[in-house]
Length: 74
Ligand SMILES: [Zn+2]
Image 1 (spheres, rainbow, N blue to C red):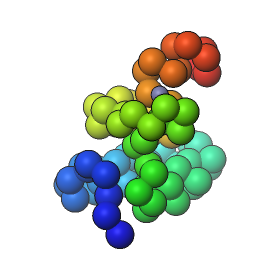
Image 2: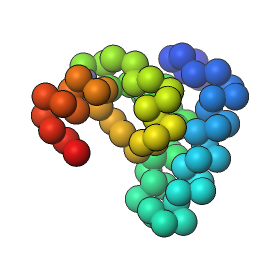
Image 3: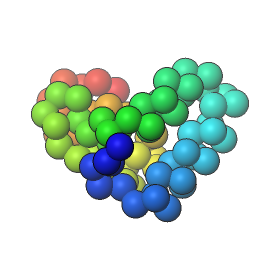
Image 4: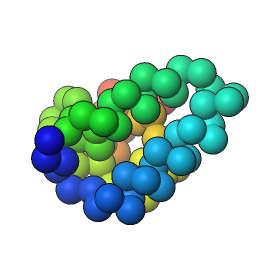
């Protein structure tokens, strides 16, 4: 299955980050599932690639900064 733009190392880093945060946030289990699909890291609204550094801060984020700002999701 092709992934959009993460390197294997980046994906491994994201997975370990999510696993460590799952202890406090069980809802991240769904994020871990999405990480295994090609859609992870892609804005669900506009399809833009969400920067790796942003995902490392907010691994569960589903919107790019533009859409997040326009809809004030957080
Ligand atoms: Zn977007």
